[in-house]
Length: 151
Image 1: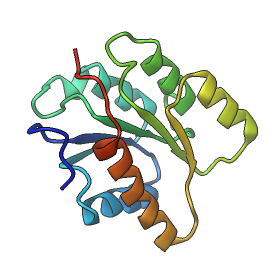
Image 2: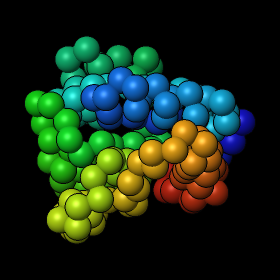
Image 3: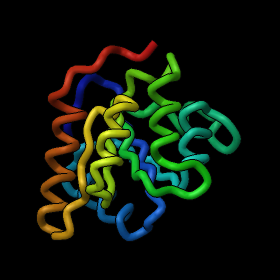
Image 4: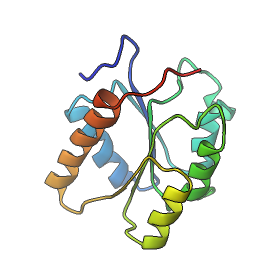
């Protein structure tokens, strides 16, 4: 298990495609790169989770994530809007956000970086490559990358 300190590591996975979400969660769990993956299926739920609203008020059950994996094509609130809100909110802007999407459109890439995404990754189609990506992604963002302590 990758550990930064004694606190458990948490990932917020924002993905509406259940098959993709399952691949991400399985890949992360198989590689033991996170203690807990919190999965939400739309942008509105992601914002509710991040701002501890509605069903996510309990901060013990729904702690601040160490990393957000964000799909772009989401129902209710688009992934780019979720990213923009995260990176313009003083209490959230330091959380690393990795856009993990099937879109390789230049406009999506540019807009994501304009909104201060920490990384932009196009989901590989090959299962073995996808699994390796999850391992590397988890180890980098949760183990090797230094982040400031939350406020």
